[in-house]
Image (cartoon, rainbow, N blue to C red; front, side, top):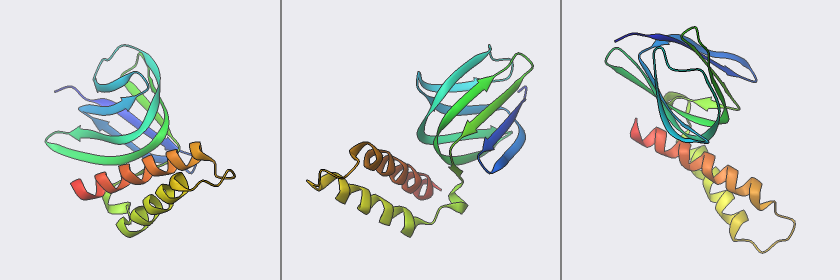
Length: 134
């Protein structure tokens, strides 16, 4: 299988710079599998699980939203707010974040930013799923 170059960038800098066979990612247009020589594309990336494959090895991640750009030179640039592999995820902290977000959503406090709580809940659930699937 042909490979393409995947460059993953976060606000902290380069996270991964690797040649992969396929990238599976949830964009704002839906779930997408990107292979070598994919047509040029720019899309938003949802808070979700993401994975890529190198030969027979599959690498899973929790992604906190961002953008994906596929250029015409067989390079994909993924710019994300945050990303964690299963090894980097602290399950206890993720479960605590989930409980806090659920509590904020249940509260009737008008000062609670519901949209922010929903994003926090989605990120926590994604992190828990990635860690548990590992």
